[in-house]
Image 1 (tube, rainbow, N blue to C red):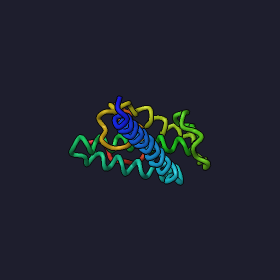
Image 2: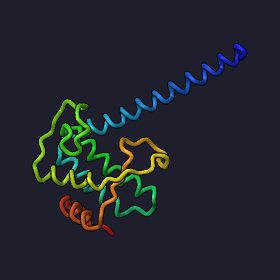
Image 3: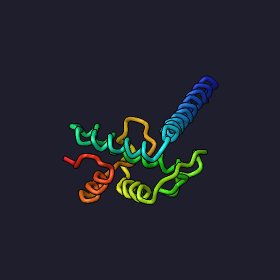
Length: 153
């Protein structure tokens, strides 16, 4: 192997490695920003209600996919603030622990139980979780009613 080829190969590998590392840092930063933005369970419930309202207005698959992912990400971020009480695996990356009522905890668990894995290759943008809200019709009605969100169309 010629020295110039080795140097070029090493440079390309280094750039790719740094690029992948920086993408990982951006992912962590996005997740941390979402977690840090949460001040209360009431705030998350308001945001979820707004997401469900917006979901009813979606006219494209991209809109639907983005909002259903945002629903799951928001509940996942709240889980961090609750030290893993919803999902049980997202603790330890927030210093602030929020209080939550038993009924709100039950609701958040119900919402997250309807989050199903999606195809990672499909996404064209960074997301915290590669899951989407995909409920049964009955559970969707129950969740929306609990949040005061409009019925699904």
